[in-house]
Amino acid sequence: MCSQRARTRTLQPPLDLARSVPRTYISRYSQQSSAPVMTPPDTSFTPSANIAQLKESATIAVSQRAKALRAAGRQIIDLGAGEPDFDTPHVIRQAAQQAIDNGATRYTATEGILPLRTAIAAHATARRQRIMAADTITLADVVVSTGSKQSLYNACFSLFGPADEVLIPTPSWTSYYEMVALARATAVPVHGCPSRGFKVTPAELAAHVSARTRGLILNSPVNPTGSVYSREEFRDLLACAREHNLWVISDEIYRRISYGAEAVSSLDVAESRDRLVVVDGVAKAYAMTGWRIGWTISTAPLAKAMTALQSHTTFSPASVSQSAALAALTGGPAIDATVTAMVAEFQTRRDAAMALLATEPKIRVNPPDGAFYLFIEAPGAGRIPDAGSVFAKRLLEECDVAVVPGAAFFTPDWIRISYAAELTQVELAVRRIIDAYRSA
Image 1: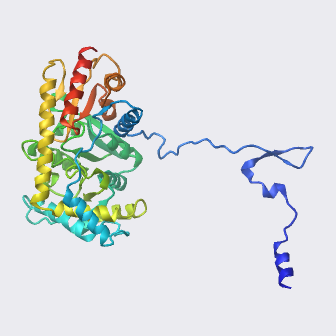
Image 2: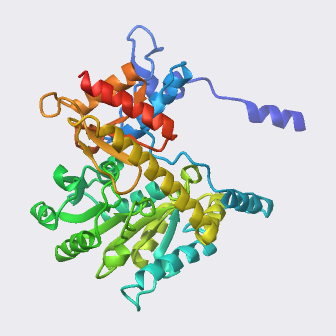
Image 3: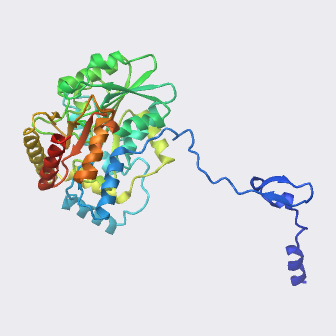
């Protein structure tokens, strides 16, 4: 009986081709035959409207191209990378290992572990209360994400949408424009004058404000120029934004890498935090690019919205990386000394590169006061279309030097070089750039 019931259950009705063949595989039926005429499925890819206009990150593309050429045997000097070439400090790596040994390998809260958020809030409060004694950054204001790039994306996606316009001082990091576009908003470049280090003025911002303008993205020290806004300049830009009721996203990932005076934070000068989002992280200052930890400081309602967004995308940042970031922020004088030494080395490389470039008076270069980039005008600027890309291609193919063309930053006559490489490599590359410039 058992076997009979089993056989009964496996009986199938006669095969009906019209029902069993997926509709996407049937184009028509022949009048002479009941068999369907099969057509292959369409395997072509058409991007959705969400990413149809999206461009690949030019900075990442240059780095990948340099690595591919190295793998093929070429001795490429990569001055396209936007990351410190130093190892993560030992004490931070030790803290990560200890976290692993202690079992910190599971999901955390979406917005990050409590100790890390507490440390971030404490640092921000100490800075903020220099000018606003009653303003305390709370845990509810902090969201930790998988790198400051995600923090920026969370802010853009939560604040901006269709019909919105977002002002971006230009040149600026290539991803700002793409993130705004992914939010279905419109990026509005505001070009700064090269004679002012490409820094924009309140008047230039105001001239681009329309009824649709909702936001402003600021960055200081600036990628790609290395320019740093002074306290007065930063304060005036924030005041302009406040006058026009704009949300400000302040990307401060390079703030600790400055030469001479300390780079200013928006927390140092903002009259109010009501429409301010501060973005920071551990990648640049602590040589922790691969650990992928960044954060936002904003109002609690916005932080709650960004947490909800993040819960449906990446969820919590890596637990071990959060422990490492905590060690970076709470390491005290030992960590500060490491950061100071790294910045001093960057300054040595900057000074060496600038001294070499000064031997060719025709080369126009923006003197950097922060970050680790030199912005150089390409030969043929103003005469050759996209002169920066032409020069960058020549440097890579003929001189084995990888740089980023200025077109990535909406300034096609320029190139960006990074001096986040060994001093001897920086000097050799700059000499090749000078030789190529002279022979152009």
